[in-house]
Length: 233
Image (cartoon, rainbow, N blue to C red):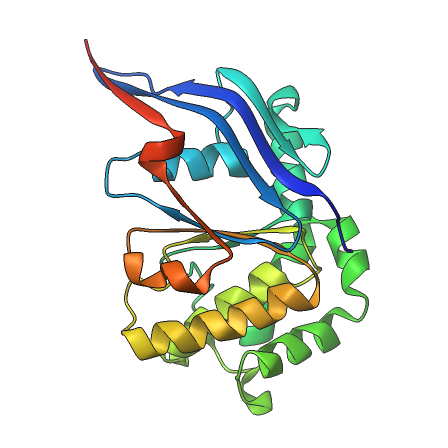
């Protein structure tokens, strides 16, 4: 599935964490176009994690609109947001979150169990999983190896293949290169960009590492698009 135009658009989004040491996050505007690789830079405490949770629909905004490929997440129920995320968003977690005793192919196919439309887009899912792993530099005979037997670099590539399978229009990457040296970062991003470009997939990657800036289509700093206020009870 290839999407054109704007894939992600936030408009006047506001969220307030409850509790004694609450804080509020306000994002007046943020857009990501189809096929664009956007790097969102921010230090610890800048609201990056909350923003990703809002975009992924794990928490609803208190106000504003979060539009992804024509659907406003703010208008969906909790279950509706979960179903939408499974179908339309691929996530690359900082800690990978692989099933340790599942095989490589089991891990790559995992999102399809919760997303029938995405599973349909994948066609021959095992073949697509195998092709993705190959394109990401994993040897063919590794697809039935257990995830806990893989190197960190191999686990990372499996996590990417899992996010890409079924061609979701938006990939969210949460600091996936934080543990890599500069050469490994460059190799990883080259492989990731090649796969997102092949399907005109949008990539929103969050990081605090300014060395990555020159490799992205566009770079946005959290301090320029968002306001965070601490609210002591």
